[in-house]
Length: 436
Image (tube, rainbow, N blue to C red; front, side, top):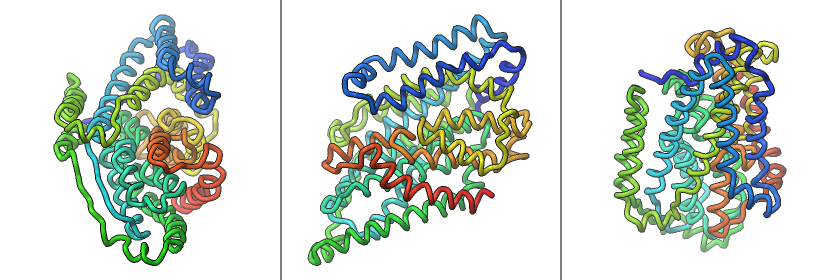
């Protein structure tokens, strides 16, 4: 299978060829991640300022680092060009999946039983690996709320985020943005399916077991008549069928060579066809807009170049951090993903794993220390569910649910009522059992 050359394949040589790459040059990266994490929680006036100017801040910080690399770092121009190519590939995939998923609408009538909810969440976890956690969240959150309309509660929102928006998408590079960064760095497309299926199944089963306890108790409180009628009047309708073949085009494009941007052109072509061919009524039903993907595009336009110094420093000095063992990578990358976006967390710890293992390239790392890659992959994807800011779809789901009249927990309510007492013990136990 053909994969792209990773954008940071030569970052070790860039960072260690001289002392030109200083740790201080990583400050724009840290500042941008700090702003991304804190600005959504800031007072209204500050948040309004951020919402208006975040694109300028992100691009400005990224441009600052790029200029330094182009003018002060030997070989810096190659690193900047490679980063731009990877950014374009990343946004082409994420954006095209976003547009195509926005043209699919599931309409459902009826009240779900706990059994039907479990089946729905399992299907959502599988679908997340095909259209991404963002796409699956957008397509499935509204049907999820409608099929639980009588007893929809905050825990319905939380467990949807746990499973569909995060844990479910751990099997393929399409599933979650961090894993696509791994694909761009040379991890084969089906490598994760071959190596983490049991960790995925056990973790998913544990979370579903806790959800069952919540949902069965809620269902038992319904009037007997409603319990009897639940599941008997289900009606499903699928709108936007034209987007199914277009989705297959995007998935197939992932396997194309990188030459002449053929892969990205097919993805963007499928997205354009989806936007123009999808009936306007379907977009209206989904409340479709380009704002979420515009935010992702602007923020990652800053994240990709500002990551360069941090990854260069890790390449040159990663062995000094003395992080060894897959469990350490699992928890360390997970802790960073929980409070920051999980994609840069993956990039940082993937580079650290290569340096620690003394691997010349990704192929060598996969052969000598595959559990390191598994630890980083599972840690960044799974722990992205620990907070609303751990993964982009989390806030999207909360916003859509709120608009539909289902109020999810507050930022700290989410952490102290659900992720710390429920999700963290599950992730810790399954990690300890399966990654030792």
